[in-house]
Length: 156
Image (tube, rainbow, N blue to C red; front, side, top):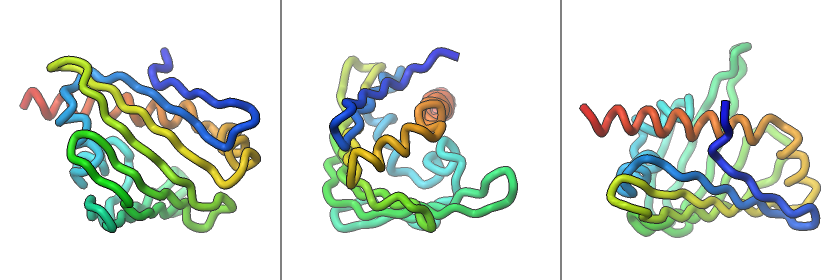
């Protein structure tokens, strides 16, 4: 499977730059990040809370194939419709500290858009630990599901 989600990582920096082009208009790409029903489908998670606004927050719970539950949560620091979301991201009960994420949504054409994610970790070591996990494959698979689910919703 071709990896469409591109991840850029400089060895000596504690950040990742993630870019993905979608065959979706920008308003539908953005909707995939703020509509709880769509988020739960493409992320494969249960949405407990999704209060997308400045000073809002979110909470998700994912169950792995062995039945273990994993929680994720964060706070929304900036929200501009169809343009950007700035948020924190925390994996509960893990050794990873909170990370800061800047999501920007770019209009390319009437039918295409691009997502850029700038993720900042507490240290280079934490970023490198994340990259040792199947992070790249996981985010690419999630973005593939996002593309397929939202494209299907667009044609209903």
